[in-house]
Length: 268
Image (cartoon, rainbow, N blue to C red; front, side, top):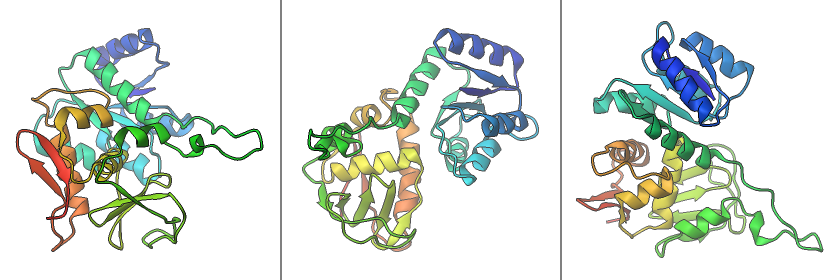
């Protein structure tokens, strides 16, 4: 883990707690050091303070994402306004913790990020060398999240922005949105969507359960592996961010809010 925090007391306390929790921690005091360390040895996860001197946590995240680095990023922030949280998500962060925080919450969010980023186990083969059904990545997740409203198409990925040609069993689709979970690509109509990891997994969950209202706790459990409780705005922020990318000018809204319950993907 790479930890970047300019407050020495917080940095030292987090480093000790994370080390006791079993993490191998590299702790730095600013964004310049964070970028240098991230380039030097790729961490499994980054814990970045938003407000640091010189290069702040948001800039660190933007640089890494621009370089194609998809390492999970958990932000630490004292900024609690919705606009501040959206700025972190726009920069490419996967999640955030608001100061002052409970270290157990930090642990829980890190575990959720690392579960989602875990590599797919090596596929098994039959005695004659024929790949088994386990060879499909995310098989367990697909079985868990597939809904009655989800449907599948056959496509192969093509060049960015182009509709890929057909190939069996690769795509899922609903409400005019198509996804290739293996290639981590998604389209609405002919328009390819540029999605973060969390946005992609949220959209995949909604597509696999198209027409079914998913409650907040179910979505939190499937996407983050942790229910943040009724007071959390985390899910609403991500849904709003995904809607802005999904719903182009003049296009009907696809993700609908069911007040007091949750969200559903459907065409009205």
